[in-house]
Image (tube, rainbow, N blue to C red; front, side):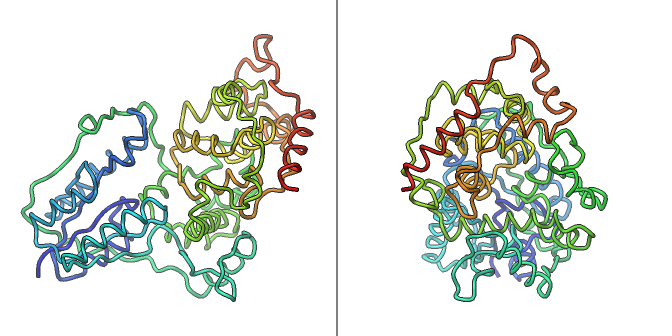
Length: 431
């Protein structure tokens, strides 16, 4: 019956992997592949922790697949060239993969689908990385929701009657047998093992039960699940997470998963938001874009302890608490009047859990330019945020231990002056 390919991408697991499940239950023997794409990798630093994480996870997947007679084939190169090579070597009848909703991925997949069609090869894609996708949650007139709360209510209504099914173990006996192992080293791709590692996630009933009360306090490290990178790269099933979260007494954690679906469908409907403001008027803002001030922000040398703690935590660990992300983003856009795209790109470079839809969505929220955005006149006071959410200074003291010493820099900008300057600048752009 020929052979089928399963193309791993953002779904690095065997359990409850929709596309893989359907590939392995078919009649064709399945060849599992993963492609390290230089069009993505060339933008990254040699010690990118996410590449190390993917590489290590592929090693683990390879062992799991080999235990049932298959061999994961890992490639490095231009995606179209890799597929042409595979088509020459194997009698491929179908390609299976899970959908990716980012603009580059959609363009890439369209090219592979066209190439496959020219060779009479089926290209089958499945929903896997979200609970509800694309236009599954829309208004009565079919238009997309651009405000979170009504989207959430509609999402919850549908979830109540259409809970996602967690698939059983795939038919792991249906791998293509007799293949030689194929791996690619980090060195071959120009990378080295990163010093930063992706932590394991933790999700318990106690964490969910306490999440609403503790989630805003960055010093409470054990109050966060660290699920972000695992959702990003699909080492955990979002359906399992949603069902488990829904079974608990507190719905606030489930709402975080709904936010993720919300931003993903926004990106799918409005792909231009990666480069332009959702609200066009906000592209008229006269950003100051001072490179020296931006550098001080990136180094955590603004003179505002919570901002500096967040930026240092990000650079050193690849993680920043969500409350602090809002504070540092507001500071960059509102206090310094630096374009949100600068901050979005910096986060994209450093965050272990970087996900384009959420990163763009949250930065536009902070700038006031996006869907369901914070009003432009909301300007976080970083000193007030510090006092409220780190009252015993544990978080700040961890990352900026000298914040009370004489050598700690004075605030680079006065809050009152910066707020007034921000409001004046925004008003001028939005008139």
